[in-house]
Image: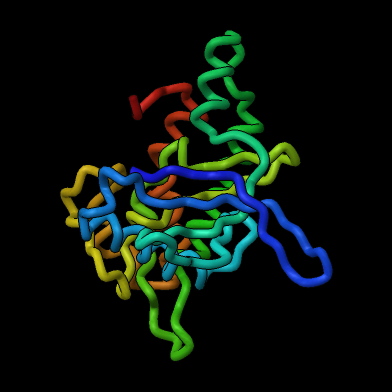
Length: 206
């Protein structure tokens, strides 16, 4: 649905920084739902600051098309790592799988417990915690991406509970986002499909 580009951000005094630009493919841009998903992703992610969540620095518009400026995570997505491990006949070591899952759960728990300045829960629940949305940098950092299909109280586009993007437990999705006290438990439940992939070498996505 979207295309990405490697770009360079420029600033004063010769400042330069490599970033990623993300914009909706031309074929989907006329669809209001996809435009709203991109803007929702910006609104949600720009309010999150966590080591395990890839940052969105800015949102802009050029030639009538919205784009996001994202943090560059120099590495691979977990789906590609799992595929290469399978081809090499060497499944992910259990210790590595536990590390990745624990980092993902830290990010989900943080987002799940996020509140507005008044202390009201934002109800952020990432609804596509699949291997291609988990990035692993060359330095071993684990970061989740793509909050465009997340559930949040402030979203302009509310993906239905039966939408094709859902890959998570729907009962927890309806109730789990409302309590900070259950944030950790909700994060574990939301990472369950990912756990099956990295810990049991069982592919749930094709």
